[in-house]
Amino acid sequence: MGHTITEKILSAHSGKKEIAPGDIVMADLDLVVDLDIVFGITDGHQVPKSIFDPDKIVVVADHTVPAPSISAANAMRRMRQFVEKFEIEKFFAEGRHGIAHVILGEEGLALPGMTIACDDSHSCSSGALNCLARGLGLADMMYALCKGQAWYMVGPTVKLILDGNLNERVYARDILHHIANVYGAFPGKNLEWDGDAVAAMPMQGRFTLATLSAELSAEFSLFRHDDILRKYLNGRASKGYEPVDPDPDAAYDEVIRIDISKIEPLVVLPHKVAHNATEANLLAETRIDQAFIGSCANGRIEDFEVAAEIMSGRQVAPGVRMIVTPGSQKVLQEALAKGYVETLMSAGAVVTNSTCGACYGGHMGVLGDGEVCITASTRNFQGRMGSSEAEIYLGSPATVAASAVRGFITDPRDL
Image 1 (cartoon, rainbow, N blue to C red):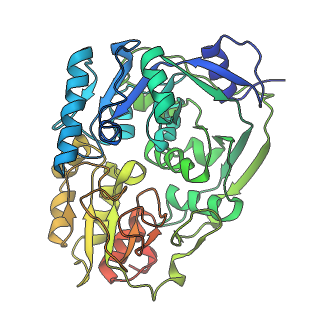
Image 2: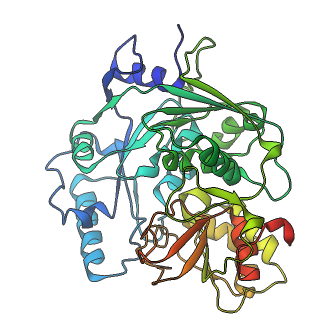
């Protein structure tokens, strides 16, 4: 019996020729990614005395950049001391910064066939690059930094086959919302994406699906290496790589086939993702206080383009805050060059520094008591973006932009 992408990468990095769901393996790591926020959570107590390989460690300032408080500033100081102590060259701080999962792709650091560990749950984003990546807890991250290894339980894999073509103003984000609504979560399982619609999907859509797989409770979420990924990595890859595709006779726990041409703009209701979405046009009476576009899920240049197209010549509705946060400094530079930032600001939007700030409720767009937000970020859990009394709806960047203009949740096709 053949193996899935996850099984083949774990096999190659653990030295075990035969692995199957249920096995526990200790895998060598190609890259360990540490974030600024960890240096604040631990007050520096979990900074290791030695590391396994400074060339295989990446440090990114993304959650608290620039520092929004004295405690964050002290954490950033500890982060810089850590980088200096171990002479880590792959360091992305103020000026070079961005959301870690965006940076890994932009800089060609996450590559096909690699294993990556990071102290952030949305690390599965790099699965769009045919790369085995997931978040680890603090204790496992400490071991990864010191030893360059991590243990994984090999989970069963679900194959998602996407057929058809998306209709106007329907996006990869809506596909994920559909899957979550119909099929729920996939705890302890891996996802593999396939089908004609995936083969035609640009990298931005793949990044969105891979990133939001964390909201499906998936362990790993992987795409094949194909022409679209090859073109994306051409001239960008930091080194050579070896793609990994599933065996033709790979064993899957389940195969789900979805005709994406039947999907409409969907919005996930507050507080949970699984089995909790509805059509955007059914929420027209839901007024909003804030609209947000950004995060590792939807902070790329294509998301700026969609928002700018919808908001061109229009204004943010009275009483609504529209906040747009780029996924990296490079995204912001490109959005400036293409005029998207000017269009959004002319419409009354706030375009911020590149950060995870609003998405995790830290800064740059925190919600107050009783406020309602529609967001193209990652999570809608109670208290995620600020007050536990706020309500968070999830939508595509197009749905968010249309809602910002109308002042209530809006199907983007209505504009």
